[in-house]
Length: 254
Length: 216
Ligand SMILES: Nc1ncnc2c1ncn2[C@@H]1O[C@H](COP(=O)(O)OP(=O)(O)OP(=O)(O)O)[C@@H](O)[C@H]1O
Ligand SMILES: [Mg+2]
Image 1 (tube, rainbow over the protein chains, first blue to last red):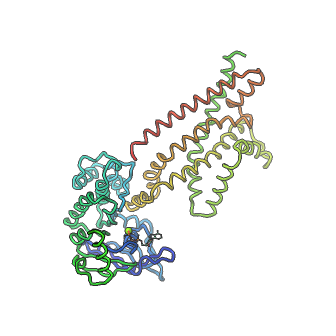
Image 2: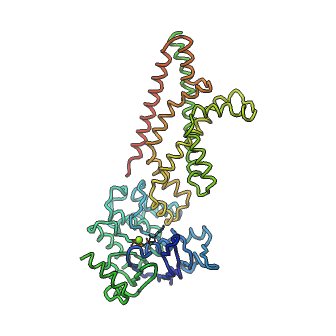
Image 3: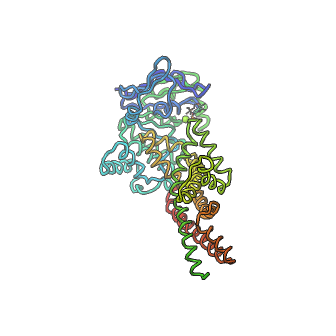
């Protein structure tokens, strides 16, 4: 079953055309890695998918429910009430975590399930504690975000997203705000989610990680999908632009 | 006049000063938030009007504003106001003036919250009002508390401006007694009063700031 289906997405900021006819669909249980140079529109694509930006054209469908579609060349969105429901389908992990600084770790995770999904507190708390354990953060329930390292904060952010029981989790460069030694602990958590068949779309610059976890790798450049395929395209890119990007990246890291 | 009678007379004035003070805060703190929303509105006409309002409130003397509020209804509209209006005029004048200052403080505080906070809440499905009340506002309050404290201290002293429309608060009475009895005593008493009042305000606000500083 398709969890997400985006077709012919177009998006401009003023004169600047950032997404030019992008299509992306994600099957249940699939892990998709999106790679590409800075400014290619990766974040914008995720922001459109998570309804933080509105598209100019094309269609977005979650679990066979239309979120946005095109009428007479312009994008039309479902009514706000339906959109709010649709937001329950996905979660998003930001590059810079965006935890709520005035909430404790536990409250960061529990607040939305209780206040938005109106689930009973006891059940949510039990689940939140289990999630924390899974994230290797047992015992940090009462800490505030500022008391945690970046890697710990990002793991709390992942737990916060998972507590909503999303069908699909988006990550926008989840480790690029972290020191190299903290990157591993976050990637390990995501890898474990992949093993559990969590459906994920991950924008990343970590090629080794993408190669390991992704069922499909998408290379984006200048607002289009240049090339996509199995993780082997990282080692054997077909397109010259992909090759140039990967070579440059390799040059930077080694 | 004995010190006792003088203190008793001034005591009544003090209560009135304190009443002006709290009525102003109760009115201006929430109104300031509404004004800030108006100022930040996407509706150009609304934000334009609010901008002019703020600029007039901040650009003209508060004393003058009090006089306009007090005498305006009669001179401009030929409405004769009742006897209770003097106090109402003081409070209306102060609330309108302080709401403008508070609005700019709120606006600065709201703009200082990273957009990521709002976006994280939106993706989690929080409604706009819940996002503002539980995610944005608590952080704003913490951020703007020192600036609000400043205004609250200024307001203690500004209550004395009610003498402009002869409202019998502390300072108006002190002036009256001082000139009729040729003594400096009432001024000294009122000076001590304002100082102690402000000392308490600063103390309470400092406690509030400490209480909110559990996170960074
Ligand atoms: N809100 C905005 N207003 C105007 N231009 C924007 C906005 N957001 C993004 N852009 C522009 O759109 C282009 C694509 O940006 P985007 O953030 O999607 O790239 P990216 O692939 O995520 O890059 P990076 O790897 O650096 O994160 C860039 O040129 C950027 O300047
Ligand atoms: Mg980006």
